[in-house]
Length: 302
Image 1: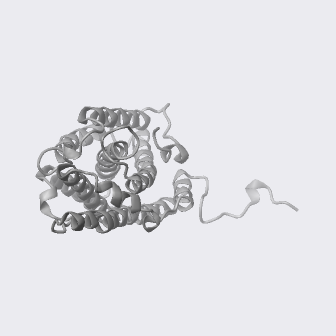
Image 2: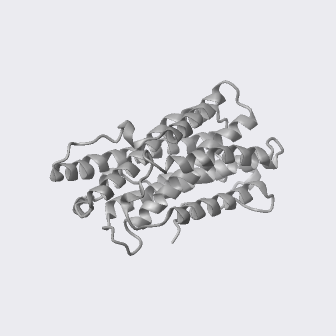
Image 3: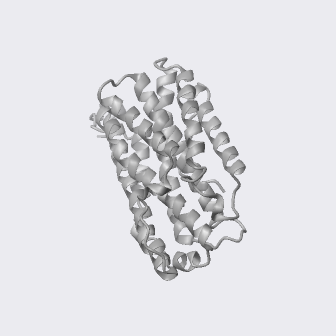
């Protein structure tokens, strides 16, 4: 005799929740940074003039360090989350941030160092302070403080601010916009830059993961706003304070050099970031708007 729906035994996990669907999506979309073929990239970077090669290294150093930093900074959120489905998802995010760090490290070892050897240059380090400026360091220090605050005072407002720092700003604006620009520059538009298919493939996989991460943060923030626990202005004010640091992080001596040559212009990337952020804020703060489901979040823009 079949059991009725109401008579089914209670299970530990609720597979219908958004967080559980995100967790399963992460499991199903597993990828290994060491399976990406980098042979063509070693040939491609050989075509870059020295200033463009330096610009590429600067971009890779910035984003590699960013992935390492957010891997470390996510731990407090994993500690304070109560729901098991949320905890399951966060374990996949920690794992994925670690994979992203691994991808950038491997690319530096196998592509950048190989090309430096070929050019007779001294091997460089992606951790060298010359790649990073003060606004970049300040941005990540603020993120670390916002996340660590949860261990001392885990209020809805502090948790919302942590999501704004981590998911909306660093992942949603800095990382996703930067990766989008690199993907266009080295694989998806006609330009004088060589194709770097291994880099582009890795960045697409990273961006897909981070679409899921940003969506999780958005869903958490929408819950706070809709329940009346956090004022929407708190979200906007927090992000607005951080945006100048994002802009300054990617400019000047310590930022992502524009010497990489043709590709999306700074104004194009700024417009992309603004439109994506405004769309997300509308989805978070408007009751009639919905957060996209995970399949849409992990599907990349054409």
